Image (tube, rainbow, N blue to C red; front, side):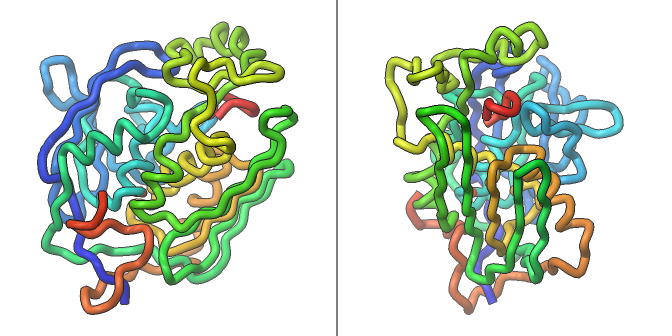
Amino acid sequence: MKGAKQTTLRDHVAVSGIGVHSGSPVTLTLHPAGDDTGILFQRVSRDGSIEREIRADVRAVTATEFATVLGDAAGPLCSTAEHLLAALRGLGVDNAVVEIDGPEVPIMDGSAAPFVDAIDQAGLTARALPRRYIEVVKPVRVSKDGALGELLPNQNGFRVEAEIEFDHPLIRRQSLALDIEPVAFRREIASARTFGFMKDVAKLWSAGYALGASFDNTLVVSEDRVLNPDGLRFADEFVRHKMLDAIGDLALAGQPLLATYRTVRGGHKLNHAVLSALMADRSAWRVIEANESARRPRGQAQIGAGLLAPAYGPEMA
């Protein structure tokens, strides 16, 4: 069976920035956590007292229209959690406490790279208990309005196969398939930025969204070119960011997935629908425990090994 101990951070680390939608300043602090904690979000006041806490779980998703929002019956706790969750899952962090003093995870540069840097600064350490995985044992599929998402069995690890299509000359159809493990996540996915279209900006602002968006944190696309002075980080940065979002959204399974996720023209809403469909079908998955005597599945970090975007609307991601 798959091998690995649960992991957590070696030390705490903090990052500060603004919310891409609210434009408000926010500080986020990552703390070590014990076995089986998972990823626990705590909303704290300015004096550091804990106001509310929510475990990062698919059942805690309250909205997916413009970003992945976590909350409960009392209302939203934090928005735009997907980039941070992708960094934690991509680097194999099982347990952490996320303190946040505002309504949004800071957008940073629009990618997961700043969170990867923060996790590297804190370092990782193994816990006592073996890691548990959610193994998909039969296909689960959701399709709607030309979009498709499906989770397929994959005993070897976690793989994402993403395809997007936009009626725009710089994007058109892009596809990418990747086994998600720490080295590949760092090199191929972490630095891909969220993107949006200039033609939608006024509408978003008038609706109270994207108030913190800028060239510093968003790839802005006009009718025929990227407006950011530094251009693209990858020729296909758009599909890479969609893959980043999917990794973060599927981290809300609560435990690493042994599965292949295939998404066509998807986004936060579809990712959430597929994961919800999986969790609702108890015959489609099982929880298995790592066995240290067997090889480690791809997509999970080992201690000592080289160190797992908000969608603004139908055409913004």
